[in-house]
Amino acid sequence: MIFGSNPFARSLVALAVGSIMAFGQTAAQACTRLVYLGPDDNIITARSMDWKSDVATNLWVLPRGIERNGQARPNSIKWTAKYGSVIATGYDVSTTDGLNEAGLNVNLLWLVESQYPKFDQDSKPGLTIAAWGQYVLDNFATVDEAVKALETEPFTVVTDNVPGENRLTTLHLSMSDKTGDSAIIEYIGGKQVIHHDRKYQVMTNSPTFDQQLALNTYWKQIGGTVMLPGTNRASDRFARASFYVNAIPKDEDPNRALASVFSVIRNASVPYGLNTPEEPNISSTRWRTVVDHKRMLYFFESALTPNTFWVDLKSIDFSKESGKVKKLDLGENQDHIYSGDATKDFKDSAPFHFLGLQM
Image 1 (cartoon, rainbow, N blue to C red):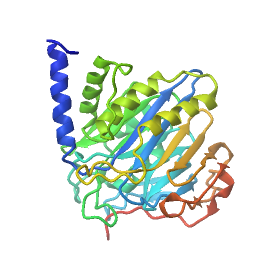
Image 2: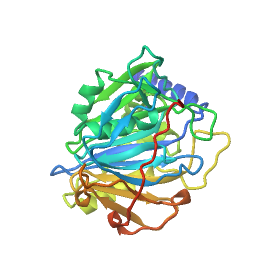
Image 3: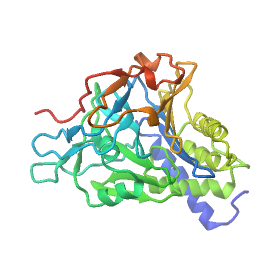
Image 4: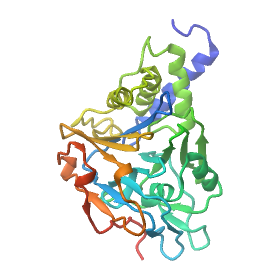
């Protein structure tokens, strides 16, 4: 027997089994996020977007200087975008993923355990969950800067139903930057919980992040070269991504490092079209993004197209004076085909509106 009489290992096994059983009873959507810490400041962040139906994603260029509010009726937080960004939307009403011109990346993933604070006229100003990620991209250059500001809780996150569905949007947010620093932000029992450390390279969905770390400790006791969990459950994807992102070569060639990271996020993806009625938490991977923080390249890969393409943030005019809102139309189910550097394929567009509370 692998664990023998080791009480620590037995307790981890019990925790793993209990958490997996609880997770299997939820109806969360699945995603994976990981950060590669390479040599010579070669930092790469990757994520998959797993969803049961078309999430209606398009890519947008958003310049500096845009005036925003939290879309939470009169008691809304207000701000002006300090940094420009390239983002991926959900339903063209929310920011689900993105990279700003300072090299800060955000990813929004599903977390069914999320419980947000009560919001009313006496609360701190409201911020629609649809703009949670955009608030971070607009205002901060690094993870550390963002964490210090968010620790003061300048707003109250306000959630609403998923577009077209009768269930609340429940998300947690990850951040990474050019230094490889990471943070995970969750709302558990109505309280903000921040996990901030460079070692927090991987995030998936349920259970909460502290339990994900405990489950990963269990798999580290076994060792990834001996056995790794192979299902599409969030805890299993966490274990695989955590092992592989540190097992792949720390290559000094940025293109080879990029290839390795793409391999890891694909390994944590769910085959397109997979539908398991008894496991509603498992959804097909719709698309993947990979951020090359050093070269400031934002890669996008749809499950329905043969090509991976990228956006070069260094060649975009993000200025308030002459920068323009632009859109890259990815089509239904993100089936439009782009190849290579697609920065030039963005078209001028009216900005989308963040989903918020109705007036």
